[in-house]
Length: 150
Length: 150
Length: 83
Length: 83
Image (cartoon, rainbow over all chains, first blue to last red):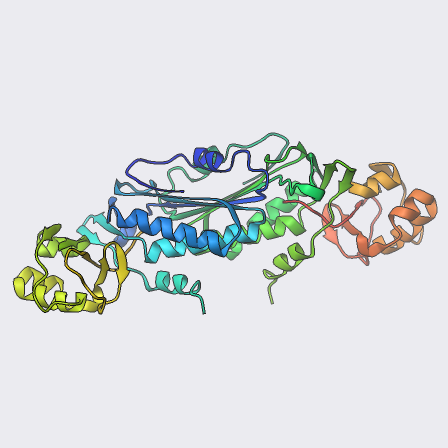
């Protein structure tokens, strides 16, 4: 299941709603990405997430299907927010549930690495020096590459 | 923070309580272990977790400190239940929060692997054929060994 | 065709989207970008280095040599920074 | 010393814990297990294969050659299966 929305999400509710009654699940892994304020010279006051409506949903649906093809998941969920967010606010939720924890962990990291490098979202930060668009990080590209099939 | 308790826990509340107001956090990884009913010939009706009260708390405290030494975590939490649990019920919660997701993921997997092989808990399953103590799995031992320092 | 611009491309070019006919002889996103650069200083500035850009056609990531068709939705944007 | 038994050891031995004086000449968990085995068929059955057992002294995992002291809390149990 995937959702792209402006509103916040309730982590406990989403996990419960996704996994309730599924007694074949042994491990549930959850990732929550939040707006980080590095402080000091890199301080930010807010962040605005722009996205490519339509493409975002297509891409999230495709990558969730790919994760379910690669690992035996009992349930999965991606929720990604857009709009203006303050430090500490939740940006993204990824939940993966499987009989065994190794599949749930691997699929979750795969999805998060993918979101950082492929999902059509762009972050603009508000800083004391003005607003700036966040540049893609090479470490995210490297993290995503480890999932490439040989 | 660690807790050993008979009662269930509220995943959303625990994450919120642990991370609220900490704007240096960028990623929060959560693992929830649940009672799995494999069904068929391996069906279980319930599971009882016995633990070594006192030692359990000491060990969880020590391993949480070790994880915080190995990775730059902003917050961490382990909650482990004991007593009789039904399929689908939550057993254990591990939350790790860090500026960057890689540390949060690695520390979380380290803690979960460790819990499976070192935390003094023993599972007894109720099956249609009677009760049986769960045997330690070699795959858990192998998973834990990858964190051994050279 | 429909053209979409995101993030700092949008700011530099001064618009979010536009609809225009695919000019004769333009068969790939690479050729399209070269043609767009001739449309004004904002375009020239935003599109000057293709290595800082990505392109999607009909909402799918594609390469610069992808075969364009009339009516395609073409989006230009910087490398994504989501998650 | 205080002795604790967990999981199937508890069932086979028929008790959860007991308090006794460390017998003369018993200096390690290995020697303690050998001595306990002579105390009855339940002990002999539960402790017959040390490879299926683990030991903690004063709530810390230790090896079979750990040096015991009077007053120690010694726990015997199968490999753990938590998480």
